[in-house]
Amino acid sequence: MIRLKDVEMEYENGTKAIQGISLTIEDGEFVFLVGPSGSGKSTIIKLLTGEVEPCGGRIMINGFSVSNISERQIPMMRRTLGVIFQDFRLIEKKTVYDNLAFVMRAVGANPKEIRKRIPYVLQLVDLENKANSFPTELSGGEQQRVAIARALVNNPTTIIADEPTGNLDPDRSLELMSLLVKINQLGTTVVVVTHEKDLVDRFGKRVVTIDAGHVINDSVGGYVGGRIHG
Amino acid sequence: MGKHDFRYFFHEGLSNMFSHGFMSFAAIGITVACLLIMGTFTLVAVNANGLLQDLEQENEILAYVDETYSEAQAKALQRSLEEIPNVASATYISKTQAMADFEAQYPDEEILQDLDPEILEDRYAIKLVDLEQQKQTLQQVKEVTGIVDISAYEEIANGFITVRNVATVVCVALIAILFLVSVFIISNTIKLTTFDRREEIAIMRMVGATNGFIRWPFVYEGFMIGFLGAVISFLLQWALYEAVSRGVDANDALQLIKVIPFSKLWAPVAAVFAGAGILVGVGGSLSAIRKFLQV
Image 1: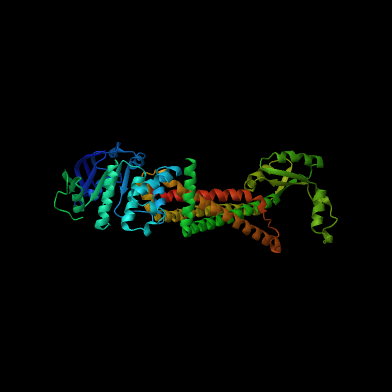
Image 2 (image 1 turned 135 degrees about the vertical axis):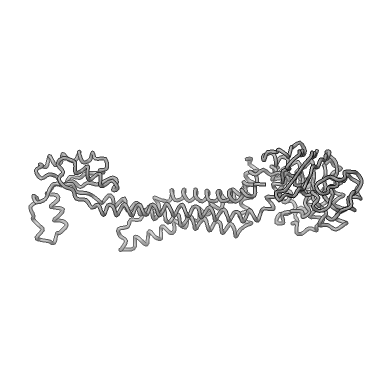
């Protein structure tokens, strides 16, 4: 479960990115986080992944209190999350298989577990035939599916996707979002940051709209609020 | 650290080294250059010190015995002289022996042959433990009852001391400077490889890898760079030393210089090279990776 209570975040240059946001995301939920550029969406992602610390309020993620987490606990908290980026962030000189094995290794999985888990995850994202390909040999949609596989491979309880369809065409975007819905149906909490109104409306999920560091709407069904600029 | 982790870190470190071939080659090359320069200066200093010790051994002072003393009385002084702390040895030389030595020095000078030994005095040839304390020791020797005069080459002794001290200071200073330069350059070289891999490090952090897990492959990489550098520089140092040693032996003008055989030096040289190489490699990689583990 993710819970933000009266969270404040101000950067060193004085920018108030988040101003008293309170938000709860239950286990197994699918939530779209939407809002215009500079609204504070990316800051929320950074707060959730422990890249930045809040200036005020409390954040709980999957049993960890991010507000006063020790440095030693940060890796443990991150193991409960799978993060997907707009630019995929795959390691080009490693094969698809090695990109996944690398992150399993990073959390201490042994070779036997890796050999068992990777084919299953690749099958989930429909890339079982691309295990030995390098990222540069794949299309944008395939690369993003590898990124999803990588986010899933350590079996996190929550997937956080930051503009996952930003570099994809509409068909691939729809395909990818459907894949995230499928993952959610298997029990994983999914938080998707996006500005693609059509896509958000199409899925009819919970939508949290952020603007100027505030939650201006939290409802199920579709995009609310007019200013959408990406 | 489990068996799998050890194999993984070792494999990652090795493959990092090969995948950044040029940078690794540069880091090894720098390690070799620095170790070779440090090693060469150290070996020169070791040989110079050995040579100076030999020269110190050969430098002796003469203490003349009161001519009214009988031979038995003169010989009895040996114990008093050897009890002086800085005296390594005191050898009694009778006036007859002194005359024989004198005549042997000038075999072709007839005028200096068949002289009466009575014109000379019984004496002691004294060798010192530490030349730097020569002045105090001379005073103590003078105070021994029965010793009437002393001849010593204080300037030569001071010359030896100066040469040895300068050689030691220059050597220590060079080693310190080169060591710091090596750490700095290797740290920067590994920093470039870590910079090249910053995306991998960021992903590892994002999926929950601990700092230790991220650090270990770089430590292994630094270890291997340092160790390989040490092995190569040891072999080069050996070849260089043997070549210089043969050159010195073959040169008539350098007959006085006795080069210590490498067979007597290889073990400490190997140990110091391995230690310094590994220290520089691991230290360099730890300092390079530190910055990437702060977020």
